[in-house]
Length: 459
Image (tube, rainbow, N blue to C red; front, side):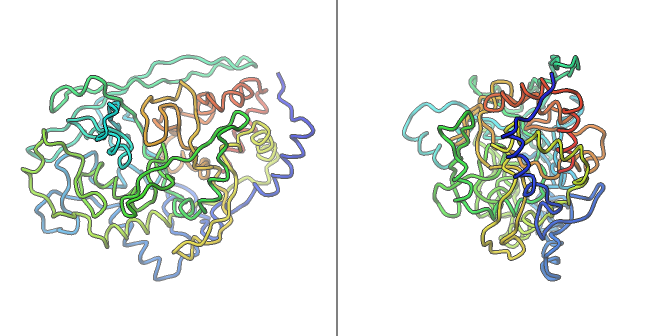
């Protein structure tokens, strides 16, 4: 079945096309770097002294943290329970993570979130306001599969896949993988019987400061609670510094309000390292973590947290490629006609940010940073603040075409848990609000489908 644009949709697509084909998706921050290090470059418009700040942040992002006490007191305090000892281990070359290759691997760049249903008590309702979930009583909010000497890891993450085949209208057969998570070798007894699990790979780091610089009013204007099948809504989360509920922007369910808090949360949950925003790591009383030495009350100093935040704010988005390719241009028209831009909003102009490099930039991230119902197939059935178990934040699409070369592998890993090995697989997992678009992809000719993928790979 040939998928065709109606006259009205074609006019709309062509009108948007003039705005949605920029060579510099990150505005003046955009880098021309290609290859394996395409995601690791500083914003091009940073001044010389700010590039030095970027390098300092990079060193703390890249280098491993160690157990306390240590002569390297700026980087000690790892654990006692953790997932990795360096930020770079999850965000490989500042790109996306991946599921374990086999069950002999540690999960490393894939985290497993844990929580239990709320019981409705006033105490738990108050906790939900500031934490968004009710942590599993023994294992906390995140499974940590590594530990320092003398401590026990919380468990071993195992992933296997069930597969099913989707037959496209032109006869093409596509195998989709549905991950099945199990945990073995529980270190501190069986978890709560109603524990909810959510597997999540580390997302790419590029352009995060630009997303932070988008005016809140521009994002809220995209909310459509009673829309025509697209009902994006903002998550509202707790800001530890402001001590207030604010707009969520970061994380797979938009569960964090800022990069600073996102980074501090990762230090606490991923590495067991405390800061001014998270004075305790993800350890329960049953795990007796206080019997181990630590690196002080705030193991990440304010200067180090500032440096890592500056680094994560200023990782440049690489330039788009193949913009003049007719196949790419045809694919963009299909993308718009399918309604994909209803969630993957092409463009914004950033507001006034405390970093001049990020301010007033015309950017093309292809996201609305809002929550959308993606259907039962992608559901983790685990709420987080306002996000339901079927809702996910729209991920930015910029940098998609660089994913494989940054990862250094033939297949990349897409979606929140890395189940999709190709962009086509990722499209075919879309459901819920995106179900009509997915059905249109199934109905496409092989030529149209190749054009759509060519557009996505140009980003």
